[in-house]
Length: 151
Ligand code: DGI
Image (cartoon, rainbow, N blue to C red; front, side):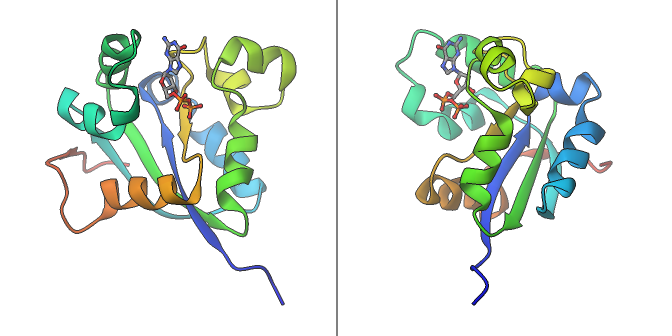
């Protein structure tokens, strides 16, 4: 039987969106067999980022993470295919884009990221994270995102 489809949350972070990487990234997504089933552009605020990255809230890089993630709009997508979660993580490459450029030169972070902070894309790292992050953005109770009309 065909393997069951799985959903994951993907995000093009502010530098990816402002650097005009969206079309290139979407091309990779579609050529890799994912369907983009939901998408929206939102402007995150500090509260949104604090909730989304709650596990990192005590880290030294957290203030910088908030500044980066609120520096402009982000594109949120739900991607679907069998093995979507691990396949999308493999496509984006390691967290540190400088390492990605060496060890995973074909990865998305190698293409558009700068370092371990500004790494241009996000992907859920496990089935529980995917479920949490999809409902975070596409659940019934939206935590007050500023949603942009244009895509
Ligand atoms: O799931 P990832 O985005 O690959 O990595 P993560 O969940 O460990 O970290 C979430 C984000 O936090 C990451 O995309 C960028 C930021 N971050 C993680 N580790 C570091 C970091 N930022 C800085 N400046 N330094 C880090 O070591």
